[in-house]
Image (cartoon, rainbow, N blue to C red; front, side):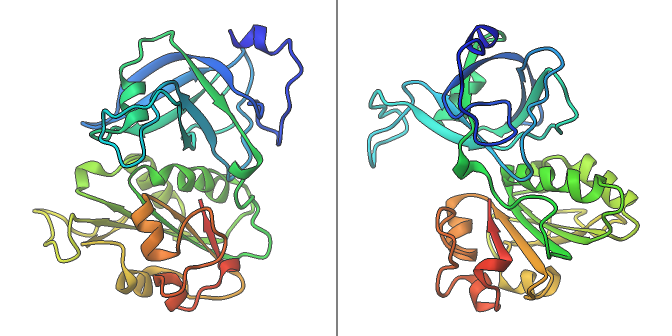
Length: 290
């Protein structure tokens, strides 16, 4: 019970309610978002905000869901699996926070969560490594947010601040890749921000399974987004991203293959030689790997 746990002294690395050690929280609700993604709500004490810094993520523990090296999807070795997630709820939400999680075939943690009953306890923590570039992103005047799939979550967190803070008039471009239009997460919310932004927020949706995929039927630009097909690649970044400059910042979040192609592994600050962003002239100070 999280209320009992809070009677013990806990170490914190930021303003976040979660300590640096594992803390169990109850699963309050889960709602199917689309055919393979679920919105999960986890409980906090009454009146309590998660108070997570922007941008930052939290860690979730799936007991016994660790796998053998190079093993198959059912080759569990008895160890625990740990995954980073970024809430899609804002810090103004009290008494709970929400995670939007896509289920993958063989995804140990996403399948574990989907099978949990309401009321189940799930362990979370928040460590210093989980604290990324911090709002207000001093010295930066333009932002390019590059995401794929559930990599939209930290971008959505940044947009809460960039689009919702009075007096912040900086420009943002979101380039968001998905397999199909049906896979786009938080589309209505993004459309709403774009329509209210007076031109400050440009959204580019990129859909496709292959670089040369044709446009799906009816896939076309709208007043709130630009419709592209294929993959998020060098040509699309040249076309839509803010160009390299000391006062620009590029956020990247997606699967490991996306990091490898665009900038190099997320746990390495430097840009990988030959990566797309490095070839386009961006430096490590211009890129935040989420």
